[in-house]
Image (cartoon, rainbow, N blue to C red):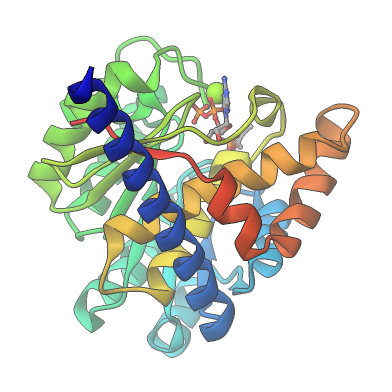
Amino acid sequence: MEEKKDEVGFAEREEAIWARKSWESLSALRLRRPLIQCITNFVSMDFMANTLLAAGASPAMLHGLQEIPDFTPYVSGLCVNIGTLTADWVHSMKAAAAFCSQLGKPWVLDPVAVSASEFRMKACRELVGLRPSVIRGNPSEIIALSSASLGATKGVDSSDKSTDAVHAAKSLSQASGAIVAISGAIDIVTDGEQVIGIHNGVPMMQLITATRCAVTALIAAFVAASPSNIFVATAASLAIFGLAGELGMEKAGGPGSLRMHLIDSLHGLDEATILSRVHIHSLS
Ligand SMILES: Nc1ncnc2c1ncn2[C@@H]1O[C@H](COP(=O)(O)OP(=O)(O)O)[C@@H](O)[C@H]1O
Ligand SMILES: Cc1ncsc1CCOP(=O)(O)O
Ligand SMILES: [Mg+2]
Protein backbone atom coordinates (compact mmCIF):
# COMPACT_ATOMS: atom_id res chain seq x y z
CA MET A 1 0.00 0.00 0.00
CA GLU A 2 2.79 2.41 1.11
CA GLU A 3 4.83 1.31 -1.93
CA LYS A 4 1.90 2.06 -4.29
CA LYS A 5 1.53 5.54 -2.73
CA ASP A 6 5.26 6.19 -3.21
CA GLU A 7 5.03 5.17 -6.88
CA VAL A 8 2.09 7.54 -7.46
CA GLY A 9 3.96 10.33 -5.64
CA PHE A 10 7.07 9.74 -7.75
CA ALA A 11 5.12 9.76 -11.02
CA GLU A 12 3.37 13.02 -10.05
CA ARG A 13 6.66 14.68 -9.10
CA GLU A 14 8.31 13.48 -12.31
CA GLU A 15 5.41 14.85 -14.38
CA ALA A 16 5.57 18.21 -12.58
CA ILE A 17 9.34 18.46 -13.21
CA TRP A 18 8.87 17.74 -16.95
CA ALA A 19 6.05 20.28 -17.19
CA ARG A 20 8.28 22.92 -15.59
CA LYS A 21 11.13 22.04 -17.99
CA SER A 22 8.71 22.32 -20.93
CA TRP A 23 7.65 25.81 -19.86
CA GLU A 24 11.30 26.85 -19.43
CA SER A 25 12.14 25.50 -22.91
CA LEU A 26 9.28 27.45 -24.52
CA SER A 27 10.29 30.59 -22.59
CA ALA A 28 13.89 30.23 -23.85
CA LEU A 29 12.59 29.92 -27.41
CA ARG A 30 10.36 32.99 -27.09
CA LEU A 31 13.25 34.97 -25.61
CA ARG A 32 15.91 33.97 -28.15
CA ARG A 33 13.71 33.83 -31.29
CA PRO A 34 16.17 31.49 -33.08
CA LEU A 35 16.61 31.73 -36.85
CA ILE A 36 15.77 28.27 -38.25
CA GLN A 37 16.71 27.26 -41.79
CA CYS A 38 14.26 24.73 -43.22
CA ILE A 39 15.08 22.58 -46.24
CA THR A 40 11.73 20.87 -46.45
CA ASN A 41 9.14 19.35 -48.77
CA PHE A 42 6.71 21.49 -50.79
CA VAL A 43 3.67 20.16 -48.87
CA SER A 44 4.94 21.38 -45.51
CA MET A 45 6.52 24.78 -46.21
CA ASP A 46 3.59 27.01 -45.24
CA PHE A 47 2.45 25.07 -42.15
CA MET A 48 6.02 24.62 -40.93
CA ALA A 49 6.84 28.34 -41.24
CA ASN A 50 3.60 29.30 -39.49
CA THR A 51 4.23 26.79 -36.69
CA LEU A 52 7.70 28.25 -36.09
CA LEU A 53 6.38 31.82 -36.08
CA ALA A 54 3.52 30.97 -33.68
CA ALA A 55 5.97 29.36 -31.27
CA GLY A 56 8.27 32.40 -31.35
CA ALA A 57 11.03 31.32 -33.78
CA SER A 58 12.08 32.87 -37.08
CA PRO A 59 11.76 30.53 -40.09
CA ALA A 60 13.67 30.78 -43.39
CA MET A 61 12.87 28.27 -46.15
CA LEU A 62 16.17 28.53 -48.10
CA HIS A 63 17.26 25.48 -50.04
CA GLY A 64 19.42 26.75 -52.95
CA LEU A 65 22.88 25.14 -52.92
CA GLN A 66 24.46 28.43 -54.02
CA GLU A 67 23.14 30.28 -50.94
CA ILE A 68 24.18 27.83 -48.24
CA PRO A 69 27.81 29.02 -47.73
CA ASP A 70 26.58 32.60 -47.19
CA PHE A 71 23.42 31.91 -45.21
CA THR A 72 23.80 28.75 -43.12
CA PRO A 73 26.63 30.12 -40.90
CA TYR A 74 24.11 32.67 -39.55
CA VAL A 75 21.32 30.28 -38.56
CA SER A 76 20.75 29.00 -35.01
CA GLY A 77 19.41 25.66 -36.20
CA LEU A 78 18.52 23.65 -39.31
CA CYS A 79 15.63 21.33 -40.17
CA VAL A 80 16.19 18.86 -43.04
CA ASN A 81 13.10 17.02 -44.34
CA ILE A 82 13.27 14.61 -47.31
CA GLY A 83 9.49 14.55 -48.05
CA THR A 84 9.67 15.51 -51.75
CA LEU A 85 13.28 14.55 -52.43
CA THR A 86 15.08 15.01 -55.75
CA ALA A 87 18.81 14.65 -56.52
CA ASP A 88 19.63 18.37 -56.50
CA TRP A 89 18.02 18.81 -53.06
CA VAL A 90 20.24 16.10 -51.60
CA HIS A 91 23.30 18.26 -52.39
CA SER A 92 21.78 21.24 -50.58
CA MET A 93 20.78 19.14 -47.57
CA LYS A 94 24.23 17.60 -47.25
CA ALA A 95 26.00 20.95 -47.65
CA ALA A 96 23.83 22.68 -45.02
CA ALA A 97 24.07 19.73 -42.61
CA ALA A 98 27.86 19.62 -43.00
CA PHE A 99 28.10 23.36 -42.25
CA CYS A 100 26.01 22.94 -39.10
CA SER A 101 27.99 19.96 -37.87
CA GLN A 102 31.32 21.76 -38.48
CA LEU A 103 30.10 24.94 -36.76
CA GLY A 104 28.54 23.10 -33.80
CA LYS A 105 25.01 24.22 -34.67
CA PRO A 106 22.12 21.84 -34.00
CA TRP A 107 20.32 20.26 -36.92
CA VAL A 108 17.39 17.87 -37.08
CA LEU A 109 16.59 15.18 -39.67
CA ASP A 110 13.07 14.11 -40.69
CA PRO A 111 13.41 10.87 -42.74
CA VAL A 112 9.94 11.13 -44.36
CA ALA A 113 8.96 7.88 -46.15
CA VAL A 114 12.56 6.63 -45.95
CA SER A 115 11.50 3.11 -46.88
CA ALA A 116 9.77 4.22 -50.11
CA SER A 117 12.91 3.89 -52.27
CA GLU A 118 16.63 3.03 -52.30
CA PHE A 119 17.24 6.67 -53.29
CA ARG A 120 15.67 7.98 -50.08
CA MET A 121 17.33 5.38 -47.89
CA LYS A 122 20.80 6.16 -49.31
CA ALA A 123 20.31 9.92 -48.90
CA CYS A 124 19.12 9.45 -45.32
CA ARG A 125 21.98 7.16 -44.35
CA GLU A 126 24.43 9.76 -45.74
CA LEU A 127 22.66 12.53 -43.80
CA VAL A 128 22.76 10.45 -40.61
CA GLY A 129 26.54 10.25 -41.17
CA LEU A 130 26.67 14.06 -40.94
CA ARG A 131 25.65 13.79 -37.28
CA PRO A 132 22.18 15.25 -36.79
CA SER A 133 21.42 16.38 -33.23
CA VAL A 134 17.93 14.81 -33.43
CA ILE A 135 16.20 12.38 -35.80
CA ARG A 136 12.36 12.55 -35.65
CA GLY A 137 10.33 10.02 -37.58
CA ASN A 138 7.14 8.01 -37.41
CA PRO A 139 7.46 4.43 -36.06
CA SER A 140 7.84 2.80 -39.50
CA GLU A 141 10.47 5.35 -40.57
CA ILE A 142 12.54 4.80 -37.42
CA ILE A 143 12.35 1.00 -37.77
CA ALA A 144 13.38 1.18 -41.46
CA LEU A 145 16.20 3.70 -40.93
CA SER A 146 17.57 1.81 -37.95
CA SER A 147 17.81 -1.44 -39.90
CA ALA A 148 18.59 0.27 -43.26
CA SER A 149 16.00 -1.97 -44.94
CA LEU A 150 13.14 -0.99 -47.26
CA GLY A 151 10.32 -3.53 -46.61
CA ALA A 152 6.64 -2.64 -47.04
CA THR A 153 5.74 1.06 -47.09
CA LYS A 154 2.64 3.18 -46.57
CA GLY A 155 4.46 6.22 -47.97
CA VAL A 156 4.51 9.10 -45.49
CA ASP A 157 2.23 7.30 -42.98
CA SER A 158 3.17 4.72 -40.40
CA SER A 159 2.02 1.11 -40.23
CA ASP A 160 3.55 0.56 -36.78
CA LYS A 161 2.89 1.88 -33.26
CA SER A 162 5.47 4.12 -31.54
CA THR A 163 5.82 1.67 -28.64
CA ASP A 164 6.86 -1.04 -31.15
CA ALA A 165 9.73 1.13 -32.42
CA VAL A 166 11.51 1.71 -29.09
CA HIS A 167 14.20 -0.90 -29.66
CA ALA A 168 14.90 0.46 -33.18
CA ALA A 169 15.03 4.02 -31.83
CA LYS A 170 17.53 3.10 -29.11
CA SER A 171 19.83 1.35 -31.60
CA LEU A 172 19.56 4.23 -34.08
CA SER A 173 20.42 6.66 -31.30
CA GLN A 174 23.43 4.61 -30.17
CA ALA A 175 24.68 4.16 -33.75
CA SER A 176 24.23 7.81 -34.81
CA GLY A 177 24.82 9.75 -31.59
CA ALA A 178 21.51 11.57 -32.21
CA ILE A 179 18.54 11.89 -29.87
CA VAL A 180 15.77 9.90 -31.57
CA ALA A 181 12.09 10.91 -31.38
CA ILE A 182 9.15 8.80 -32.59
CA SER A 183 5.77 10.47 -33.12
CA GLY A 184 2.47 8.69 -32.62
CA ALA A 185 -0.34 8.30 -30.08
CA ILE A 186 2.45 8.32 -27.48
CA ASP A 187 5.46 10.34 -28.66
CA ILE A 188 8.73 8.72 -27.55
CA VAL A 189 12.21 10.24 -27.08
CA THR A 190 15.42 8.34 -26.38
CA ASP A 191 19.11 9.10 -26.03
CA GLY A 192 19.92 5.42 -26.50
CA GLU A 193 19.49 4.60 -22.79
CA GLN A 194 16.76 6.71 -21.24
CA VAL A 195 13.28 6.46 -22.83
CA ILE A 196 10.40 8.85 -22.13
CA GLY A 197 6.80 8.94 -23.35
CA ILE A 198 4.82 12.09 -24.10
CA HIS A 199 1.06 11.75 -23.67
CA ASN A 200 -0.15 14.94 -25.32
CA GLY A 201 -1.92 15.38 -28.66
CA VAL A 202 -5.21 14.33 -30.25
CA PRO A 203 -5.86 11.69 -32.96
CA MET A 204 -7.28 14.35 -35.35
CA MET A 205 -3.72 15.73 -35.76
CA GLN A 206 -3.01 12.74 -38.00
CA LEU A 207 -5.51 14.13 -40.54
CA ILE A 208 -3.60 17.37 -41.10
CA THR A 209 -0.80 16.95 -43.60
CA ALA A 210 2.62 18.16 -42.46
CA THR A 211 1.90 18.10 -38.72
CA ARG A 212 4.84 15.74 -38.25
CA CYS A 213 7.04 17.89 -40.51
CA ALA A 214 6.05 20.95 -38.48
CA VAL A 215 6.87 19.29 -35.17
CA THR A 216 10.34 18.36 -36.46
CA ALA A 217 11.01 22.03 -37.29
CA LEU A 218 9.72 22.94 -33.82
CA ILE A 219 12.24 20.50 -32.33
CA ALA A 220 15.00 22.32 -34.28
CA ALA A 221 13.81 25.64 -32.81
CA PHE A 222 13.60 24.34 -29.23
CA VAL A 223 17.03 22.72 -29.50
CA ALA A 224 18.52 25.89 -31.03
CA ALA A 225 17.19 27.90 -28.08
CA SER A 226 18.46 25.38 -25.48
CA PRO A 227 21.43 23.65 -27.15
CA SER A 228 22.90 22.39 -23.89
CA ASN A 229 19.95 20.06 -23.27
CA ILE A 230 18.83 18.50 -26.54
CA PHE A 231 16.93 15.63 -24.89
CA VAL A 232 14.76 17.96 -22.77
CA ALA A 233 14.22 20.43 -25.63
CA THR A 234 13.06 17.59 -27.92
CA ALA A 235 10.60 16.23 -25.36
CA ALA A 236 9.30 19.72 -24.55
CA SER A 237 8.63 20.59 -28.19
CA LEU A 238 6.63 17.38 -28.76
CA ALA A 239 4.59 17.92 -25.58
CA ILE A 240 3.90 21.55 -26.38
CA PHE A 241 2.86 20.84 -29.97
CA GLY A 242 0.58 18.03 -28.74
CA LEU A 243 -0.89 20.34 -26.09
CA ALA A 244 -1.54 23.02 -28.73
CA GLY A 245 -3.42 20.29 -30.64
CA GLU A 246 -5.51 19.45 -27.55
CA LEU A 247 -6.41 23.11 -26.97
CA GLY A 248 -7.11 23.63 -30.68
CA MET A 249 -9.41 20.57 -30.69
CA GLU A 250 -11.60 22.23 -28.03
CA LYS A 251 -12.59 24.79 -30.68
CA ALA A 252 -12.21 22.84 -33.95
CA GLY A 253 -14.93 21.21 -36.03
CA GLY A 254 -12.55 19.01 -38.07
CA PRO A 255 -8.99 18.87 -39.46
CA GLY A 256 -9.28 22.14 -41.41
CA SER A 257 -10.21 24.28 -38.44
CA LEU A 258 -7.89 22.28 -36.13
CA ARG A 259 -4.97 23.44 -38.28
CA MET A 260 -5.94 27.05 -37.61
CA HIS A 261 -6.79 26.62 -33.90
CA LEU A 262 -3.60 24.62 -33.27
CA ILE A 263 -1.52 27.55 -34.54
CA ASP A 264 -3.54 30.02 -32.42
CA SER A 265 -3.17 27.82 -29.33
CA LEU A 266 0.58 27.43 -29.82
CA HIS A 267 0.92 31.20 -30.01
CA GLY A 268 -1.17 31.76 -26.85
CA LEU A 269 0.23 29.01 -24.59
CA ASP A 270 0.86 30.21 -21.03
CA GLU A 271 2.69 28.88 -17.99
CA ALA A 272 -0.37 27.72 -16.03
CA THR A 273 -1.70 25.67 -18.95
CA ILE A 274 1.68 24.03 -19.57
CA LEU A 275 2.23 23.23 -15.89
CA SER A 276 -1.18 21.59 -15.56
CA ARG A 277 -1.47 19.85 -18.94
CA VAL A 278 1.96 18.59 -20.10
CA HIS A 279 2.15 14.81 -19.54
CA ILE A 280 5.64 13.29 -19.83
CA HIS A 281 6.71 10.06 -18.09
CA SER A 282 9.74 7.77 -18.06
CA LEU A 283 9.26 4.52 -19.95
CA SER A 284 12.59 2.96 -18.92
N1 LIG B 1 -4.19 8.45 -30.89
C1 LIG B 1 -3.62 9.63 -30.59
N2 LIG B 1 -3.85 10.21 -29.40
C2 LIG B 1 -3.29 11.39 -29.11
N3 LIG B 1 -2.48 12.09 -29.93
C3 LIG B 1 -2.22 11.57 -31.11
C4 LIG B 1 -2.77 10.32 -31.52
N4 LIG B 1 -2.33 10.05 -32.75
C5 LIG B 1 -1.53 11.09 -33.10
N5 LIG B 1 -1.45 12.01 -32.12
C6 LIG B 1 -0.71 13.28 -32.14
O1 LIG B 1 -0.44 13.58 -33.51
C7 LIG B 1 0.98 13.68 -33.74
C8 LIG B 1 1.30 12.99 -35.06
O2 LIG B 1 1.00 11.65 -34.90
P1 LIG B 1 0.91 10.62 -36.09
O3 LIG B 1 0.15 11.20 -37.21
O4 LIG B 1 0.46 9.28 -35.58
O5 LIG B 1 2.42 10.60 -36.47
P2 LIG B 1 3.13 9.60 -37.41
O6 LIG B 1 2.34 9.50 -38.67
O7 LIG B 1 4.46 10.28 -37.53
O8 LIG B 1 3.12 8.30 -36.67
C9 LIG B 1 1.63 13.00 -32.55
O9 LIG B 1 2.88 13.60 -32.28
C10 LIG B 1 0.61 13.21 -31.43
O10 LIG B 1 0.82 14.47 -30.79
C1 LIG C 1 1.92 14.05 -48.14
C2 LIG C 1 3.38 14.21 -48.34
N1 LIG C 1 4.01 13.68 -49.42
C3 LIG C 1 5.31 13.93 -49.44
S1 LIG C 1 5.83 14.82 -48.13
C4 LIG C 1 4.26 14.89 -47.49
C5 LIG C 1 3.94 15.57 -46.23
C6 LIG C 1 3.99 14.61 -45.09
O1 LIG C 1 3.93 15.34 -43.92
P1 LIG C 1 3.66 14.68 -42.49
O2 LIG C 1 4.46 13.43 -42.40
O3 LIG C 1 4.13 15.74 -41.59
O4 LIG C 1 2.17 14.45 -42.43
MG1 LIG D 1 0.19 8.83 -38.64
